Image 1 (cartoon, rainbow, N blue to C red):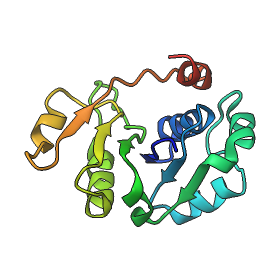
Image 2: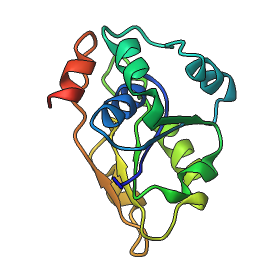
Image 3: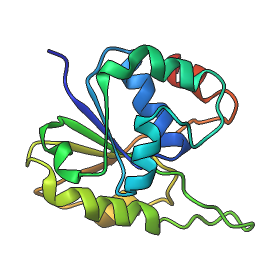
Length: 155
């Protein structure tokens, strides 16, 4: 069986990434503490406009589990924290949403689960939150609105 992958933060980046992982054959947990958002996603209602996303989800829905329960992440081998980060006009990002989601999911993960921040964060973000017993990694995010599905499927 393929490794189970979790994605936390069902905004543009997290949602597209979760659906793309499912389309590549991975059992995927798509988690967000916003229960109303999760209910919409379970009904197939897309909270973002992205060409091809609804169809990609429809074709791979059997491999995606939408949940507002962080405990659903406890059997994931790899968990991406992937919310959209609001950016001010001066280019600074409000990473508090990433911190909130890390705090929400952290108590539910197994000790061996790999945590990766996919969102755009400032240099030093993961280093400041890294602990010897629980490393935090970063992966460069390359979302382009209007081409997100294409880029997620063919990075």
